[in-house]
Length: 292
View 1 (tube, rainbow, N blue to C red):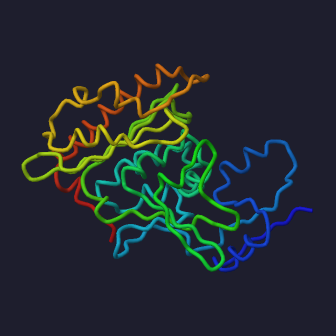
View 2: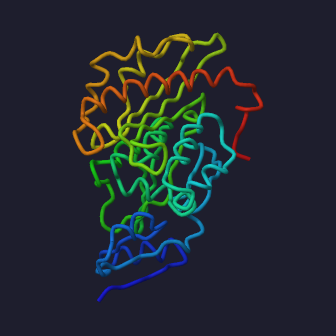
View 3: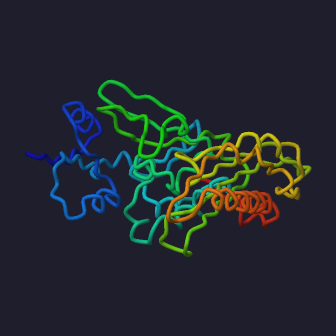
């Protein structure tokens, strides 16, 4: 016999998780389509009454994004320009209805190689908070993602928040996604880039992540290192060498071949870097934002 529970506190939620196997229900945008016409055969733990898991807040260490924060809430949040890639990705997560219901944590826990939220969170140095009975731990997002539909969650754990370190919010960022059509599509390739520049217009820090071209989205550390010290108006194409893309492992599928994905990633990387670097030339009133 299946069970349904809707706890009103995080303590009660993790207590229930410790009792046995549960399927977590948050936004439901992946849960219900996966059922199709099949009957429900799993125990469902509905966490939507956990108000403490909602919202974007500023902490002494940086920014906290509650697990139940929706993509629409991300779009409406007053965030620094370093988060622009995350906001641009939020606009690409399905339809407006999906953005209103789908949660940031659900996007991560679903662990699809094509999850729109992962590359922009990777370039922000995101860490996830995992809670269980008597224990809370934090993991870098790159360590949390273990493969296609695989995460580091262990039985009894619940993803409760995503943390962005304060230093990682600096700079400007951009996100681009390629699909077979403009909207409502699973990506063929996607890229997020964040650039931090000094007063002389030199890049002092860079982060570039590619999704849909490996089992999990990946940071391109070799390219990031090459970008440091370069002027903002550098032509990124000159830095994207063949070995840079060797960090990726794209596959052939119905949406595109591995070769096409690799070439698409090359183009998107260059455009994203230009977009992030070019944001430095925007008027201050367009970029001087922050969490209240």
